[in-house]
Length: 377
Ligand SMILES: Nc1ncnc2c1ncn2[C@@H]1O[C@H](COP(=O)(O)OP(=O)(O)OP(=O)(O)O)[C@@H](O)[C@H]1O
Ligand SMILES: C[C@@](O)(CCOP(=O)(O)OP(=O)(O)O)CC(=O)O
Image (cartoon, rainbow, N blue to C red; front, side, top):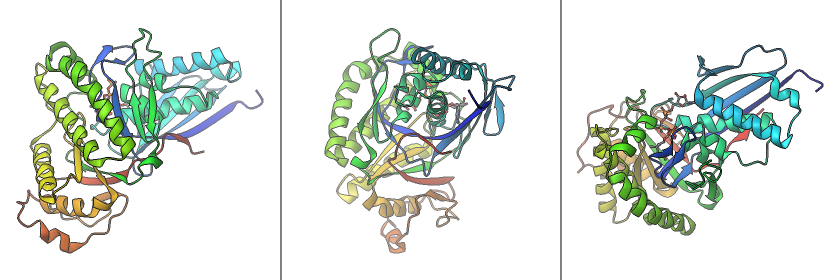
């Protein structure tokens, strides 16, 4: 090789599952017990950004996350790096000496890390995608390697609507993600993330789901009876752009996932009182509007992810702002992401609804379905 340093910088999106992944059959390879399906969110509003420098003169591998050094020996980072290098070596995709050089990785998320906002998904997808760019594995399947960083990361390798098939092989080669439909298929699918709490959660997804697999009875029923049917209905709803069906399956699956968390022993409680209020208000809103205009889903945390169509964003946001008044309601600091112009008269329409204590929500992120990872340098 002529030069002694190579560098790549990439961004990768967050994805929020509408059919949740919860439970592993193999902990170290991260093989799930059920298929899952998610929507990839726009990197314009939420993303991980990772820069990797490989240098012949570096003496150590280094990983810096949000300005702080992480342990490079971390099993998940190690597995991703080793697997990508093994694939590059097998295919001869880059010069051999490049694979010997140490690497310095610097990554940051433009949203809270480890708060149930899927930072592990965008983070590991970004790491693996960046490594694949560095070692010239551009057209290769890499979702199985992202999966070894964090299960949900395999879905962030693609944009739009993405399914992770659990696979049946012991080595996990068939446990990969694929695109059900591109973002352009349903570009007016928008998202409002109501951030109730963005501090680090008490029970991580990894340990929570491990406990569910061992102790929950309900999880077996979900995996065998519910998920296969839901994947089928959800895929059809996406193909038909049938929001009402999409919303129904999304809400039912979120509720069932949290029911399993409660059926876990000791239970994992991720939603809080505000989360449950949001659920009630959304049902009440849909009922009085006479149609399903908005769906909620909650990952392993209290924050609500609302799916809705672009044409309903203003109205839903006015409703949310009425229920959860905030001193900074109109500021870009409070409603982040895609700007929204309010119609103030809408707010009065919801006067029959009780109001929650002021400043209950920390902030709101308005975003939409988006594309997969990309190189930005
Ligand atoms: N940009 C990044 N690059 C590499 N690793 C990251 C990055 N961001 C997060 N991670 C890893 O993911 C971990 C957080 O994952 P965790 O599952 O606890 O939270 P979360 O992904 O935000 O929530 P959830 O998956 O439940 O929605 C971090 O501690 C770090 O190890
Ligand atoms: C509730 C979820 O967000 C769980 C995500 O779990 P992770 O992918 O974070 O878990 P590990 O594979 O152990 O890293 C549901 C989902 O994203 O499908």
